[in-house]
Length: 263
Image: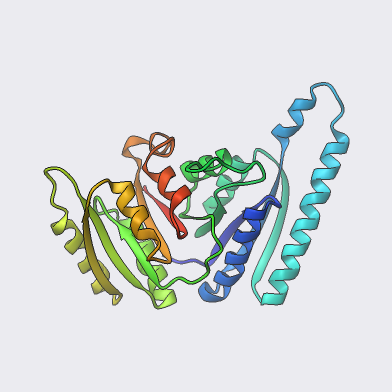
């Protein structure tokens, strides 16, 4: 697992400014090359019907060019390796296509339209569902990553690997966490995952809580700098994201959340 290429979708919104800030900070930590992608939403021009949308396209392109130009200057100033891409199409489709060649994506969970409390934007949702690389989602501007929470409900090796590599690079510690529910005892699983982390030379703690899974994870999120959460493909990411566990954690956690698909 490496983080050499980091994809950063932006749309000029306040939340994407936060993503840019974290990406620039992370570039020096991970020694990564950042690709900032601004997608002009082609579907937004459909509302004009037969009306010529040339002017609207021109304005959108200018907005994208100006934002990427400013981002490039910030990257130059910080010494980060970077490239900027401006294109037109369906944002989530283009971003997911580009994710095939990325090691990590940094994504703001809301865009220009904003989101209701406890929900994530529709574009962000589709990106998380279809991305080919882990997605670090955020809604706050925290840049410190030392204490990592790794919730487990099975042995999701891709998520474990992402947590280990992140901790190794930043010199951080991983807390392997699970929630005890009815007729289940996660102690064996927690210790098994903790042993994998320890064998990788990472400082490790274990923690088991009782109660609602989401409430327990959200309650702990304020004590950590990052949550690395594996998502199983068996039930389909759409069924999980739409009003489910992942969406609630991504949209309400007090720290950034990296979502890792178990391929």
